Amino acid sequence: MIVCVWVPGVVGTAAAALLPWCGLALGVLAVVALLLARRVLLVLLVPILAWMLAIAPSAPGFASGSADESPGVRIVSQNVRAHSGGAAESATDLAGSGAEVIALTELDADSLAAARDTLAADYPHSYAVGTVAVWSRLPIADAQALSLGLDWKRALRVVVNAPDGDVAVYVMHAASVRPGVQSERDAMLSGIADAVAADSSGSVVVGDFNAASADPALGAIRSQLDWVRPTDGALGFTWPAALPLARIDHVFTRGLTVLGSTTMRAGSSDHLATVTTLAF
Image 1 (cartoon, rainbow, N blue to C red):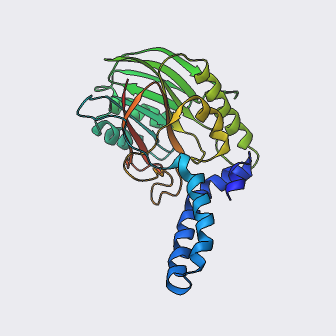
Image 2: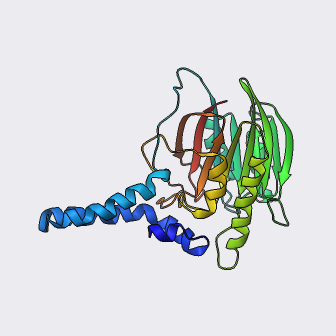
């Protein structure tokens, strides 16, 4: 399984989704060995150690600062599931989290209109393109649509004018991983890495990447930015919301301090939202 995670394409994508659950299987085997054949525990140490090393880049982390020292800026992001009719409810719940910036993905025309109506009063600054949009309590500037190698745009970049400095906020909705279209997702993940590599600003990238944490397709952006680890002690799985099995909604930063990172339920989406507090 660990070797498969290094293989680009469908093999690596599938292995990345299964890798965290190998730890559960090893844990069950260790308990059985402890009860029935303790000498087998010595044999199990090898795969357990290998798994721990493989999962380490996707393991939970710790906040780099204290919310008491700096209030920070909270950015939330959620895939609201197109045609579900739940965008307004998601927007209400996310606004209730106290976020300064709200990013939504997989928006259709009706859900975009519903979210706009819900957020207009408290989030006067916004920008939308394709299936993605961002709302902010803070002023935004330099808004631009990003195609990331596709013929249509499903990513954006804005500059948020925060009290402690400006930050480039990227929102993306990667193409789905289905037979015959994984190349489009991989092209978008490579494209977002190229975009942030050319950006000298402090940056944060949020959205639905349709790739588990250890997916080799995330290698390019991991080389440019820091993957934000959950700071609540969990693995931060976001999909499916009813029983999260994988983290496919991510947050990447550069030049920013992570004060906290977790997930939350919002609306009726099949994705949990990511909630990240940053010091710019």
